[in-house]
Image (cartoon, helix red, strand yellow):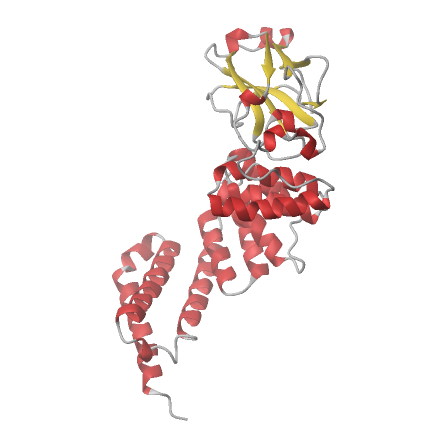
Length: 354
């Protein structure tokens, strides 16, 4: 059997490129073998891609299907060996997961992402990738309980993570929670471009139809916020939702809180994304206080307090001044409220709760 000259050239070119890069970057290997392998692979593929654009691509066509694949497989083997020697590298496990996914090994990718999340459990992007990998590894492409938990964790750490919000809505539709999925996706409409919003509205309207709800108002109409009946909810409360916030007296005596701490009064969708549908910010020294949450307090134009039947209300003391939950923050026990509420909601910070 005669091997075509072009195939020989391509194989030799690939070997030479990878060999030269490995030699030039050899000092890096003595410090971090994982980084060395990854950089050699990425630069090697980049050089080959550049050659295909400006060189003579015909010389590579007969071997292009095998050479990069073999190179990636070799790099994966070396990466696995490095992780066996030093497994406490979340970025290494994430790189291995992406490589396995590129090779068409969804089960291996899922397992590698799980190891990465064990080492870096608070990285939103990693949590979303890991959740997606579990769905891709499932024969029915379903998000299981672990994947959903990772998505919710990602949103707790960064409520603006749109991929987590999208996948959470997908998981809710898979579970038959169509109304919840529609509400989850509606929270994205204010943060995407017009073309994406148009496509997203189709998905939302399909979910709403399966939930027995009418479609969203046309873009530019009175909007979702004014459509209380569209979500099956009651009319907007005429005076919003009254909330009383106080510190537990016994807790206040035991603990010295910073005087410049911030208190957030938050209403959100029960069991939905952590993004608030209404929020007010006050100083700790203002406690006890009473606030009136209404549509003017909504950070999202696509979802207002008046469009909901039910909300979960809580108060949070934040030392950092951020509305996102952080380490050391204190929260009242969340209270689930049916709207419109006739009586104020009492929230006490510092009492023990599950």
